Length: 250
Image (cartoon, rainbow, N blue to C red; front, side, top):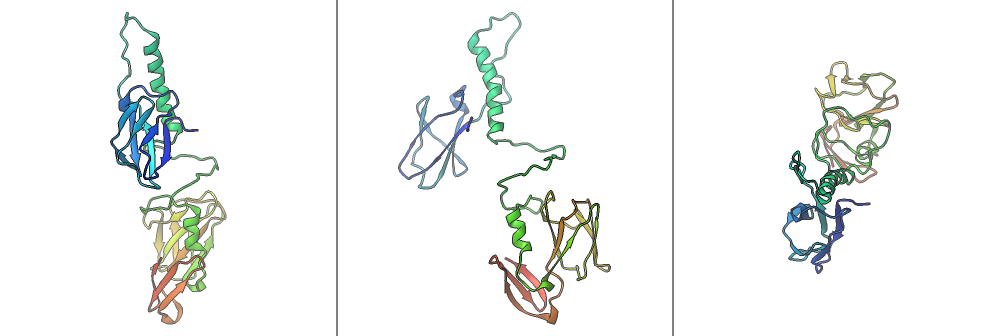
């Protein structure tokens, strides 16, 4: 159930869109329209209908949102003043509408403590863009389930409390990933997530992960025989090797 927004799909013709928020809205300034994530201007037909011009293109996502003021009180009461029902209702509605936005997932916050999901899943995670973004299972698996020579990658499985991970292959040009239940899946960042000892062919993780978590070394420093060419993975990725060195996985 949507409380604070309505979602429509453009068809290249429709310009009028209904306002269907739970509890309505407090003032027209609280209503906003976005087309494919970009806020656009609109006109009011009446309190239950708006019009957008030109008509959103076919397939465009039209999002009509109610964004209640969170810095200014709808009504500021004074001692001894006469309090009427309408004002009390609107004051309560302002708080409830703000909660509606949170329930609908419109939350713009920075975490000041580490969230504990208590072994619950976080679903519908998009593909990462920045190196500190979370990664979904499909994205991580695309780097792990590769149908290339075993010399191009190595997998080590963590025991309980294990942070030191040794590899039989050179790690000097390796890229490391985590995969496993309850692990912070995704690429590990050197100096933040681990410290490398290239002589010992070992990395030391900055924290421990649940037993069974896999640490995957991708892009070993050498391919046997100093080969040059491309390898195709079973999910369509291309591994490019130049004189024995992996140069890209796309």
